[in-house]
Length: 156
Image (spheres, rainbow, N blue to C red):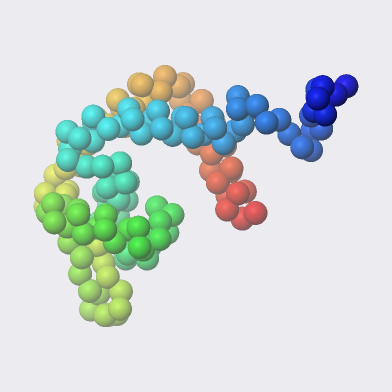
């Protein structure tokens, strides 16, 4: 049936729905904004932005890492990563050093202050986990699905 030249029939499955609530991209966007907003007061107390927190997570896991490897871990271009690193360096949380074996490569290392910040940050994942209200199984499933989605979209 058509009303004013617009079909009122169910959309073809290949075409998909144009209803906002049917869009996975919107569900991801809304969830990302909500989670990032929940992080804000926790990270403000640490003096970090969310992207800076992600950099610190990588460094707490692996103290010395090249800028290239850090960018790959965070899926960030160096043009995005460089200003983050400069701000964290000026805050005294990390230092950038040329690698003696390859002067073209820069290693990122935690300072003592950056290493100590890890202790204060230990409560952040717990608070976020509580806010999300997922069971451990749901948490694992969500991460697995999001990693699959990211890989599929990135490879496609």
